[in-house]
Image (cartoon, rainbow, N blue to C red; front, side, top):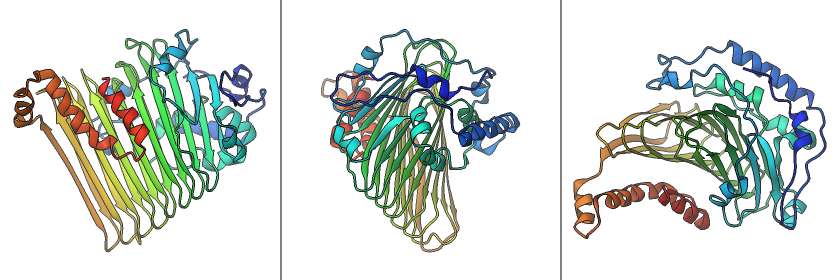
Length: 441
């Protein structure tokens, strides 16, 4: 699988490029902390000893295992495309800060308001954080157990990660504009291992917008990413990811969210790309009044496969979770959803919802849905459901009778179908941005 990446080595190549009033310079190269080196060594052992997934595994049921049978993980080479033009086509108009990686190398790390730094906001790379915020990273970096099937791939990620971001928002600080992160990939058969760690301290408010982009739609590749989202009491976090890997990419993304007392987490995954894209999302409500909204929308074409596995884990009384996943499938595309609402012993008065809807726009499209409940407490309200259907003839007739051609009419119906997910993001400017991104496709 090649040599493991040494974060100390790449610090020397880091630059900060910005015309904005405030930017932070990355430090000179230093050795990785011992705990991180030890963690990488342990992860290497787990990766080597953990068996490769089989379709008979419940967590991989219905999955096309052949898509993840990758024998080599070559490091992405030099990035030659125009980074600025790629970012300009997708960037949020006025973010609070922006970090850009291209083939795992840092292009820029920018914080646009000096007052945020003065308030104690940390927005920096994983490499810099290992030097300057080692103990903070040690407490939260990949601290949650991988429970949805990709333990082997999470271990691989831990051994290879270098293009990572740390965002910490101090107690009581509210940041309206999103922090934006780009992971760009160029080159055939390249691999990338993006990582994002967000720590929202007590009573803070923050939004993160993350992009995963392939430059060439003909390039094959492999992405293995992990997100750690940590919400302290009373915090509120909106996390939105837009996945645009090439149609020949294999992608595995492991999301972990921990929501403490009276905190509110919203996680939206927007999926456009990938040959095989697996999203594992686990949210743990660990304090009374905690709430987690787990959202996803996917537009699948050709022979794309979106594999979605979720866990809503309620560990404390008086907690809420609400999952809404919507998939629009064209051609021979297929989706798999397997989700579990788990109410742990003593987690009374849990309020949990789970809804999956698939819109089949072709007779050859396929949707597999497996929602589930495991309730180990009393006095709870838990509902789940999954539906699959085609465009209603009445809806199509209504639009065509008003002079709209067949294809634009179907496009309008699909956009209306997906709008419900986007509108759950309680951030008007970000919602408008996402509607434009979806419409452009």
